[in-house]
Image (cartoon, rainbow, N blue to C red):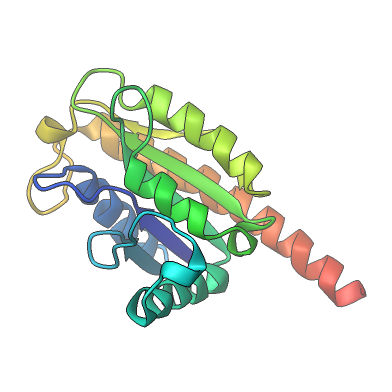
Length: 189
């Protein structure tokens, strides 16, 4: 199984990257192949008419498209900005559609406050349904992210580590159930 983690924050001083890299490390320890798609490293301009795109942008879109398509399942990691998920993540999602079809997708959301990105995560789950994908019902929420993770992406809180393990247990079960079923359908066709 291959899991792509889409890191939806591009701001200077961002904190959500700590969660993305922590989840990546946890998945690798479980023997899962991962691919972090960091929108800071692979930025996309605001979605525009295809005729206005440079070849450089077209190449980047194709590269991200390939990476998304190769993933069996995905995790979206986003900060909560003004009660919603990041605009950079929404913009990136608008570039793609078929890459998400019938794939399981988990949501990890962070906030500087105590609610841990609950509004962003709920809205993102609705968008996942609109993409034709399957949102994991359980979310990984990280409140007060700036105090929970150190600079090495290690949580200082046992409760966050426990929540992350529970989230990944559910995510992997959900992902395996869906990908196994999809593979059985393809084999019978």
